[in-house]
Structures are given as C-alpha cells and as structure tokens.
Length: 316
Image (cartoon, rainbow, N blue to C red; front, side):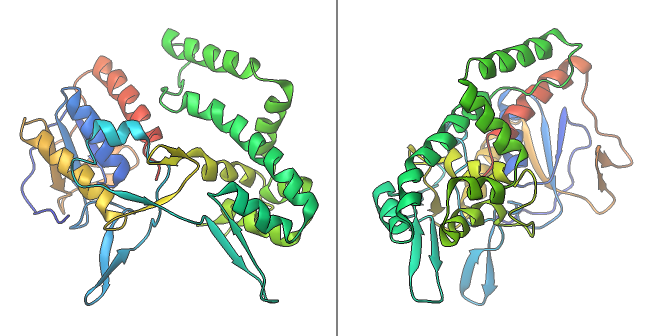
C-alpha cells in the first residue's frame, strides 16, 4: 500500500518509527486505547519486511519475509485482518530435502507422512520422532502462556515483580524433564540437540535448516536450538504448528493492518505519515525541530504495556 507524502502533525501521544507489521500493529492497539499515534515510514510503501513488490515488469512477490505462522490469532481478530481481505492458505509441506542420490526427505504438517519419510532413512529416528515433537510441544506450551503477558522490566515496580514471580511459579510447576528441555533449548545449539535425538545426517539436516533459515549462523551456534521452537510455535487457520502463504503474498498482511490503521484515522486518533526528510530515526525515537514525546510517565507505562504485548504477538 503506497502512502502519500503529507505534512504530519508535530505532536502525538506516541510516535512509532517504521511502518512494518510490528509498528502498524502497535499503532492500531495504541489508537484503540485512545492515544493519538504517528507512524513514520521512510519508504513510499508500508509493510517493512512484509511487503509484496514488483521484481520484474508484471511479476510481484514477497521481497523479504515469505511465509506466515507466528501472527497471533488475537491480532488477526482485533485488527479485523480477515475483514480487510487477509486469507492464508496452509502449506502442504514444511520442508523438502533432496539428496544427490535421488532420494528426498519431507517434513510436516502431516505427521504420518513425515514419519514414513524419516523411516526410509532411519528406523530408530522414526521411532524417536514422536518423543522429539512431544519435547518441543511441552516447551512451546509454557511460551504460549506468556506470549500476551508484558515482560517484567523493572523489579522495583510491584506489577513487574509480581509478573516475574508468576513466571517463575509457572516454570516450577513443570516436570523436571520439561524444565531441563527448556533450559537446553535456550542454551544449546541446534546441532548438539539434533545429534542427541537423531542418528541420520539427512534427518538432522532436515530439521537443522529450521534453526538457521534466514541467517548465516552455523547450526552449532550456541542458542540456535531455540529457533527450532518457532517452527511448532505458531498456527494457521486454527491449526497449531502449520505454516501458510497469504493470498497476495506477505504484503497482503501489512495492507490489511494499514487498512485498520486508516480506519482508526477516521476517528481521528491514528496518523500514518512518511518520515519527513528533516527527521532522523534514532534508537530512542525521532529527532526533529519540534520534539515529539509522550505526555506523562503514567501514560508511558500504559503505552509500554500495550506496545510489549502487541510486539510479542506479531512475529510472522
């Protein structure tokens, strides 16, 4: 969705620098909470990394982010993305690994099909696959329970201290084996974890790809095991662990978000503007001749909570 260059107002309750999917989502929630919001985007198209652009005359595709699963159902509902035209088709296959000898491995979302594919390389790995998925699902269950909670940031505040205690209590309720698995997923490398679970190199490569997709890191980079959770964390059309493709590609998601932001504009509470040339984005906000800032510390705390919840729920 292209946006026109217009002179923005100079004072808002909240300024969001960058009109990507996170920025648009946060802007909508903040506007719904009654705050005046300015979204400043440098490019002539909203969407950030989730955009659909013409890469050759007559041909359009996603130019960065390319698949969706981590977009929280609450965000889809609250921002009325389906009403704004969003439709996501489920991917019939998650990963495909062709090998030089002509054989191939496939994974997800059909468990039986995945197990049969893995069995053709290793009967032992096929037997261990259900336990591997069970381990990931147990860890994901804890993370899902925290997804829409504002992360505790300041233990001097009673609200944050209580949140930290509740998080710790939920962790302690888990079986010792699940606690250990979560610790290993956050600290070990994907390579070490997969070496523990499986014996076949093709099987380890099939799942190891999930831990390094989109990065140049080695699968033996400490902490990369956590990324394995992302591929069972999300859902599409109510089906957990499934990935999908948006009709109209990834830009369809941010166009729907922008449509909801523009609906908020008519209230009027939310403003979507191009970042002017005399502004410079910084780590702390926007530098301009007229300083844009929140109106009070109480409002900032309220804004922080809304922003944290919205950001945690809009990974694609």
